[in-house]
Image (cartoon, rainbow, N blue to C red; front, side):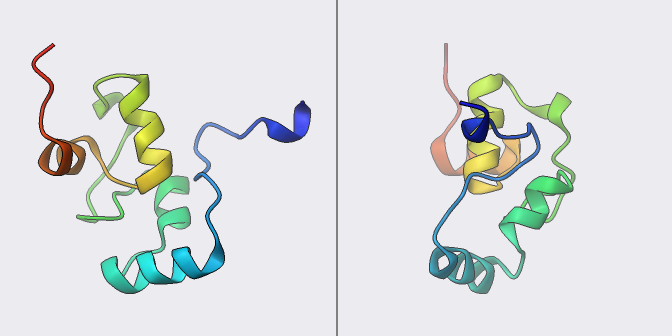
Length: 79
């Protein structure tokens, strides 16, 4: 099980071609953005404290999007 545990500020793995496509689209390396807590979409500061909940932070490790960009793309939950 130890091999399956990721560090908290580590991007989820993606195929290298997907990473290349994302980098070409945004102009930013998603893996580097997650490691440095920078938004891969807007380039802004994506500090952990800015995330609404653990699921939003998990989405950051998947997409590299800060909370503001997530809200813009997915909408804001009314819960």
